Image (cartoon, one colour):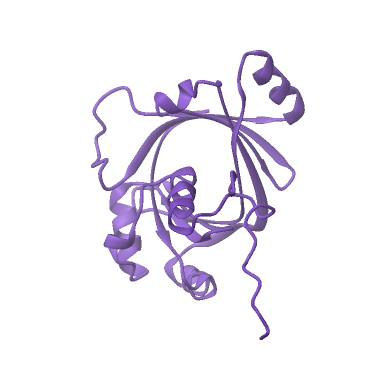
Amino acid sequence: MKNSEIELKFPVPDPEALQTRLPQLGFQLVTPRTFEHNTLYDTPNRDLRARRQILRLRQYGDKYTLTHKRLPDEQAPVDTTRYKIRIETETTLSDRDAMAEIFQQLGYAPAFTYEKYRTEWSHSADTGITAHLVLDETPIGTYAELEGPTAWIDQTLVALHIDPDTCLTDSYGKLFLDWKQRTGSPAENLTFAEITPPVLSLR
């Protein structure tokens, strides 16, 4: 399936308070909190990254998905400095390991892994299009993503009392690299095994 994806992220300091508010705004829970594991593939020279494309294998619960994302062919109809827009081609898989082997035979190898616990909510926008909010608990913080028409995104930010200045278009890979620079962490992937909470001294 191929579609145009418009989204925006924002940090969530209080996930419980946010999710308590969602049903009051007409959101419906689609998928309860579920573990998600993602692997990005690229060539040794990072050719896909240079072209701002991604090739991803995702495990979400017991579901496997293959996704390719790229920039639009033409000038985007929305403000790309404020919203993130990508052309996404996606399909479900029955055999993730076989697809991973095919990638490696074609010269693509795992380049980056990231994990999170994701909760999915849906909302019927005024345009009749079903929009989404997902809550992602990552090893470096909790973020929400709004995906839908730009007018709906703006209305939802107002309804949730979210300051637009806190919103982001960065990928989790970019957020991870920024976090590494701030913290000096030696972690190579955004996984719970590599990033553990600091041990508090009892002294």
